[in-house]
Length: 365
Length: 153
Ligand code: HEM
Ligand code: FES
Image (cartoon, rainbow over all chains, first blue to last red; front, side):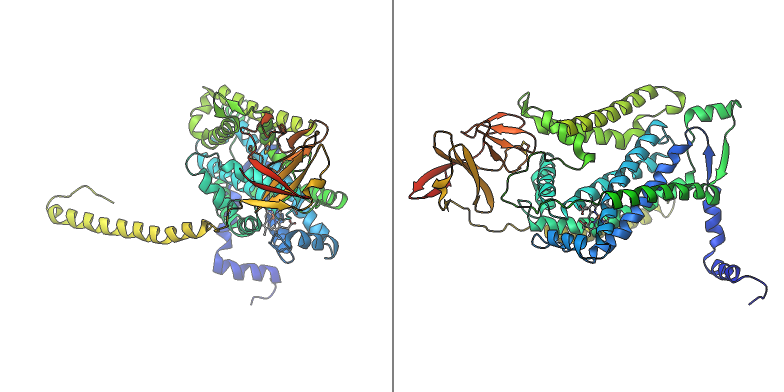
């Protein structure tokens, strides 16, 4: 070994010779992050990614004590909360981080929607991102049942029953999700399998594609900023992703850690009452906040609309909304030339306002 | 790959190649079916041949007060026994016809209420307001001494 070189340099060179770190670092630093007045939105994807890592870490810790059965699930979470040292902290972080992750994901999704970052060549980045959105909601929904308390029991009943509305395969899907005709311990086993094996596997796969696409294509520049740059009015400044922007990202993550620690320590997540299959649904029952707008819609919809079950129409409308978001890069064909593009911004505003208003209403009545 | 037939060898190569393609694609197809068929079947929960409950006895059910209700087990599902303000006994399935939450008796209005989406039924089980699309399933009630016997109608 060469003398005079530091140990870390030697180690770096040893690894570099074998795995070609240099090209990896080149790949990461090639991407430039443009700096402009919309740059703050670039942080939310990274925050969501970071919170996913937090979920994986704390989730794996929870599996050490959690027991997925109707007889033991509630008691095992209680045990984590009261007996296991720092158990309350780990569980609180897992729950709060799940909620923060969904919040940052919503912000990320709508910010790239309004900046029209989905336009060519980033259609696939959008499509994989939408897949992640659906999977993370599934993560939240399946995790919510695991403590086997009253609220989560009924939320799961209603949520899985909704799948039954899908034409032709609905009944089959309900049984597939529940592991039987009703929500029972069999459902809990299944949801545990989804939550800790199937979903993590799928998310990891799609997330990798998503992030590699982002890295290869670089950051999109909003149309207005791009035009100003092309016409020479206001040239954009770039910073390389690695290490410069990565350090900014790191700063964002520290903010997340601080928020998370404060929430988990000051407002430990509650456990509620154990699920009782023979107790009425409690008054004031409500799903997690990110499903409240759908829940409130179901409350408002009349039993029958033009001879059809109201909830079927409502759920179909949400399905169409989801499909619209999924396909938006292929529907909004020409955003760079401003044709029809107002319409898509308008639809986006409608969706956001609808979600916010119904969520607020859901908490007031 | 160039699939345009080239001159000369085309007469023999193309049928052979398409035959190979046929073999390859069908055997891949068969493998996929052979793998996913059992997996799909495995994931579909078996029907547990639970004997359909025809009737249950609610011990001391007659002690229920006027204008109140009580959940009982009808097999593996919840039922609700109701005593109207005039003292009459009625029983229904407690599964809301909207999205399957368990209903409860609401004293203030003498109605059956589902907390999930504010569904309301009257004391005959008819859906009177909110999202439920159908009435609650009705059970027959017989009194036997202090007990109440509930059976499928
Ligand atoms: C590999 C990743 C993950 C593993 C191994 C894991 C594992 C677990 C376990 C064992 C529980 C049950 C303990 C408990 O209820 O506190 C749980 C609950 C939960 N998980 Fe995860 N999880 C993972 C990722 C996620 C993600 C990405 C989300 C995002 C939405 C999430 C959301 C939840 C929620 C909402 C609960 C219920 C928390 C509660 O009320 O206790 N999990 N998870
Ligand atoms: S489940 Fe009863 S009102 Fe919706």
